[in-house]
Length: 502
Ligand code: BES
Ligand code: MN
Ligand code: ZN
Image 1 (cartoon, protein in one colour):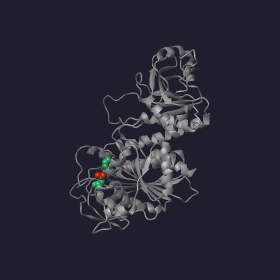
Image 2 (spheres, rainbow, N blue to C red):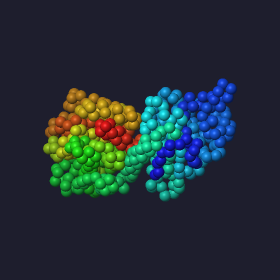
Image 3 (cartoon, helix red, strand yellow):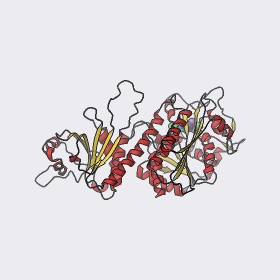
Image 4 (cartoon, rainbow, N blue to C red):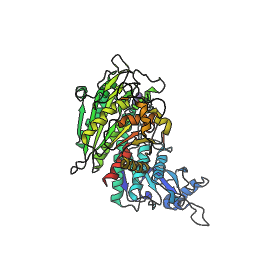
């Protein structure tokens, strides 16, 4: 993938496809006598054709408006996308405009696009953010998971994105383009891992990906195999995996971006490569989606890769316990009592509440880093999807400052989080008669009782739990994410670490 910024007017750059976002002000009539929209004159050579093509289209630059034109000259196809009023433009509107252009019908198979925006530097958005968000929207919208198509696969796919903006300093524009390319590459990685079928994506494979990232960016990865997991007494991870013929893995990937500091942050991701429910078997309908139950782990790997690629000055360890939750002769059962690495015992009431069980060992292990904060990401509960759907991630925790920063990072990246309470009154729902804690809390407030379960394993460290069950595995496409793995978490956590390291 090639991503570049050029400090030029879009009219000075050759391309097959132009995506041009513009505001209602740009589309105002040129004068009292001439109703031609102002921006038309910018096209110079092809202004005549454009004027004819536009006549009758009623394009006023309103938000969501879109028109496709075929002016001769440098641009074979021009997609004009309305941004609405200039003073109301946001980075999210820029992402969506770029994405709309990418998804607009194109003439044939093109491999490169030119993107631009008029009135490029609206006051409320920095030049860096303008270039970054346009590219994010475009590249993320261009994602396809077509690895498994052997027939009818499009030969050409978009592989070159150019932003042309006069008036934005070259070094700022180029930096924004590099950063956007990097973050999108990591989101692509996370999406690919999630979308991969479970026959090709199991704990050993996930561990192999961590090793690959470590090698490429010279990071320190540690992969614990089944013997080492046993030696660490991770009774939760072992039990959940016990129905599978494949061995579990416990993955750690350290990024040391600030060698002068001993401060660490831990990000922990649920890595269930397939969740059948185990002995408490799930219904057949849509069970295949549970290949994405490792979305938390995938987001952790994508985030670490991106932090390393961007060289953000912060120390972060990524931790991903990984297992397959299957029924079988050796599978763990309802009624079992497990002893976790922390020594805390769990009564298993339902083998389908497996995420919190593997996380209990991982959250305990994270304390070895004496972290400034522990943030976990998990496709943990259907209850969270019932509460928030696919447009907000559920946020729970004890780290108030961290949650405030995540909220801000969520607004900026539009990977929004919404805090839910973890009042102690809910605790009694996960009380067990025979063990320290029970793995399900009954019908009500399922996302909250799951969070309270996790809280038992984080000691006194500031901790935030992000339930991404609704946001990581999309049932419906969004503006710049197709159905399936969204890659949520990568942009959110990258922005979070950018914020706290600046
Ligand atoms: N991985 C699921 C949660 C999930 C459900 C993610 C739907 C995405 C979409 C999790 O392991 C699970 O099965 N949770 C159970 C917990 C219950 C048994 C207490 C659930 O939410 O039904
Ligand atoms: Mn489950
Ligand atoms: Zn699960």
